[in-house]
Amino acid sequence: SPWVDLRVPPAEVIGPAIEAQEHRRFLKTHLPFDAFEPYLNPTGKCIYVGRDGRDAFMSLANHYEKGAQASYDSANSSPGLVGPPLPPFEEVVGSGLPAWFEKWLNQGWEPLVGETDGWPFWSLFKNMKTWWEFGQAHPNQILFVHYNKLLEDLSGEMQRIAQFLDIPVDQQLLSDMVKACTFDEMKKVADTIAPENGTMWKGGGNDFIFKGTNGRWKGVLTDANLAAYDEKVRLEFSPACATWLETGELPA
Image 1: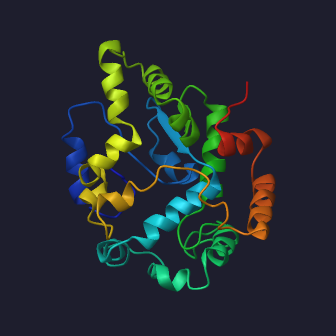
Image 2: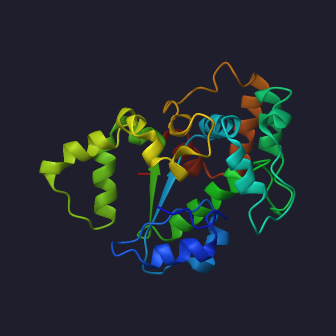
Image 3: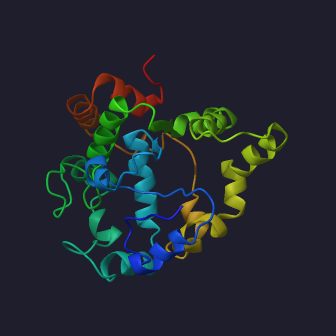
């Protein structure tokens, strides 16, 4: 699933590769919906994969900490850089994860006008909020899939996705497909399935396919961090959106 808004590889490389695909296309984006909307295929379908913001932060911290020089080169040296370069992880987290979490929660990255969190990356809150609002208005065009539900019932979620995409499921093959998508099985082939075959991380694909667990923020983030996060969620999201992001439970 090519990440189409990443600057690596450049558009002149990724474009022809996408055009050459003969199967049904599936593309990946990290854009908020208002940035993606001009490119939205009105007959296409979108799957939004979400995770509790505290767990997403810990996953981001791992990817950032384990980033190899190649990851900094791709971010800072590829054509099209807007704004300042991505700072080294050690510089950002010099005062500890709780201090960075406070800044991540309350400050946007300078070039992304209007974003109020995510530093030095993009806003989790704007991303979630804009896609949620689109989804409420267009329920037949977007499916919300939560990390918790994938852990709890991978088979059920895979069949739910297939139904949304009108893809028939061969029940004789389903158990093998589910097994192949488990964390343990993906860990075995991490360098094959990780972006750029894992070369963006110091430890290769194993640093990308890392833990696959939730709650690693417990005992790391402070009570003040968690209270500030809860308040941000209350201010930014509707109750239904906040519940889904934390638990994966959709409104009845």
